Image (tube, rainbow, N blue to C red; front, side, top):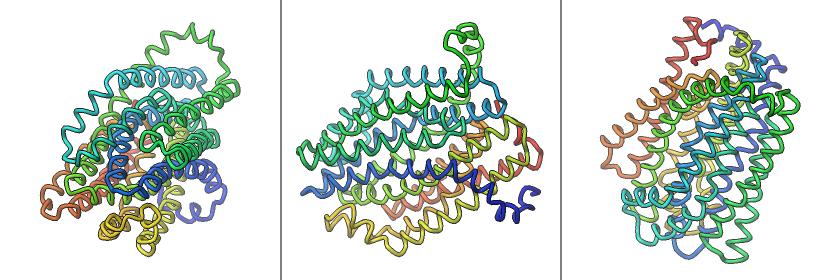
Length: 455
């Protein structure tokens, strides 16, 4: 491929890497705090007397995270569309993306609040977790559900700010949210002994603090970049309505893609619960580290989304190819580092989360899978960013279907291995995601089609 014939400039052009790091580092720093919340929850609850406290929080938080991140399409679509509008220097479309995204976020949040108790009962009907784990999962879930309006609006604002090539504002949105959560988590659980409900309440309050931060930065950027008054948008009502159709089509495809992803993650948790409280607790600890890798790499994926979207909006093939190649270099370096840490220091990092001997012993059995995960999953994270920036939701949807089918097929064929089968299936799932997107990308690039938005 011609784009890879320029590897020397990719390694030597520090200006390129400055642009990549200026977008990626703030998002890496902020994203790392997201799984740290799960680690703080696990560390606080994991030092209680019984493993079912940790299992309950793991199950409840996984469910709520699964549902909220199911609506992560709001961020993804907003980033791609706003980045393309930014590249094309179209203020009207830039404004419309934000308005459309917030409208959809509030609609979905209201629907979830109405249905959240029913959703929990349905989800629990598929789990064979112990009664104690289910009790604490319900306690966590019912409190945390009230985060929905803030959490979903935060998705939209984060995507819009990032699409505007502003990584610092999303960084502060996420960091403030998660620092407030960590502080309140310790206060409510450790100091005030509010238990599982206290951990959930901390997250609710933190999400609304993040909402206030996000609104501040969006209003500030609106005045600087959009240059449209709210009253002037009344004359553009038809354009906003027609633009919503494009927004909905992209969101539909990414939603279906996210649904498959969350089905795989939910199966990982629920099937692990069937193997016993220690297995579900150990998997929760190990998956927390998988999430650290994913959120760190998502920082670079977010950067590549913004750069790809802007390059496509500006129709700049050179900018597109260099941005992709440069980001891949950083991805390989970082994931090699993660794999080395997990391979060499795995037992020590697990010990930081729980002092329950049975959980630590169980987790150590599966550390090799954790060490292999970063280098296999790397390609799925980065290609996701490329395809989001190009607003190619249909390709993302189809490759996720294939990957999810591969996950369940591998698990079914190796189910006698029990929890090892789950981790083998997860590794296969990540590998197929990256490989299938890579094949589509290479074919599209050779045909000269990737510089065009798919919408």
